[in-house]
Image (tube, rainbow, N blue to C red; front, side, top):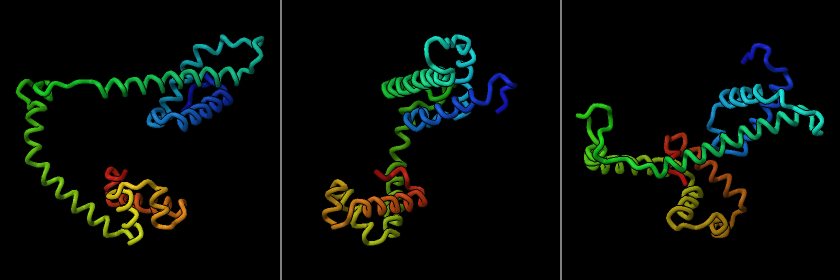
Amino acid sequence: MNYGGLFESWELGVAKRVINDYRREHRSLAREGFDDLLQECLIHWLDVRDQYDPGRGASKKTYMAEVIGNVLGHLAEKTRTDKRKAIYESVSLDEPLNDDEDSPTLKDKIAQSDDVLPQIKSELKIELSKAFQKLTPQQQKLCKLLGEEGLTITEACRRLDKHRMIVYRELARIRELFEKEGLKDYLK
């Protein structure tokens, strides 16, 4: 992105480094677009960079990193707060789903889905069964231990008499197979 000479290369470098660090630490920021975060931070930096005071002992790069860190911290907190609000948001079952008053309500959709739900569950069982059959016998046993028997990974390692790293590698292979089969959402 070209910012028309508003920023020096070191400013862009500091901003990118701090954003990458924060995105690794905060999952909510990892979902945000990098360029959007960069633009947000640079706009704020543009507003406050003239307030830098060399007499306070910090370099201009350190000051910028602190400013951008504060912006990202506020954005991460806002995202977490918004997510919590959405969890508790209520929706009327009788309110139309579209702006049109004659459109179906959520209650109507739920009633319709009762007929479809058993069919979807049946199809899902078939897909899961097909994916399970593609696993090695060792992987199938691991799935049964962790799923059906509800063992922890440590307990499964003991039961299988396998090192923890081997079990984790097998779990990664199982996840990979389920992802290829389009069943990623059904893994714990």
